[in-house]
Image (cartoon, rainbow, N blue to C red; front, side, top):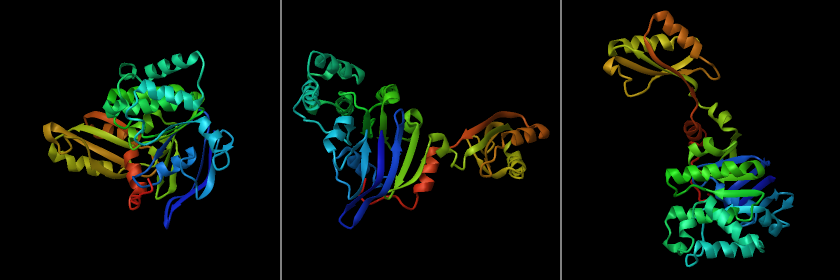
Length: 324
């Protein structure tokens, strides 16, 4: 549904996007991640036709954005950063205006506006001027206009920005509910959102893609992937011995303190056992604990940490350019 071909965007001598290429199919929700200034919003603006690429193009539902920009815009629902809207309009007036723009007419127009208002939970503020709304309600009005025409492709820049936890949950559920029939790209700096709604994630830094995979594949790049958290009933004086024992196991790379009782307070020692790359060590750790007769309160396997992967692969290139 979306094919990005070697997109480049330069602003004078500064290259904001440096040859980005990827595809998004129907049913995919692609999380677009990166530090501020990495080129996320610039890429999204080129896909939607708001910025003209310096090189390359985007194909949306078979239409080339550089040759058929209006056809592309017909297929796309776009929620830009900040969700700008006319402040003196009411949400009801704004959505009627969007119906005019999108060519939504006839007897179903009113029903469609009511349906979308209910989906994003703005029924109670439909006749209030947009400038008086909270940031969260403004964001939901922006989301309403993006999905009003039931587009095949959704491009959303920080869709849950400014929402409280309950509102974030509602919007994520809405995205999941629509995802099977659409191709969706959403940028976010909230890594839990990737786990919550995305089937795939791309990390961009300094205008280039540096990682592309499912959330599980990205977590597998974490040094904590398959790490074992172990909590043992033992005193502080036994901690060093337990740590040394675990550190000598064949599949173990390192042992770290973990948890509030890592120092052996209250008769409990908590450690995180880091495996050598790609190793599964939970059975090895469990066997050793049994052999030593340790009283184990907890033995858990870490699935990897997206925040640590993000920091590791973007460190040193913070993307501090202004090409966000």
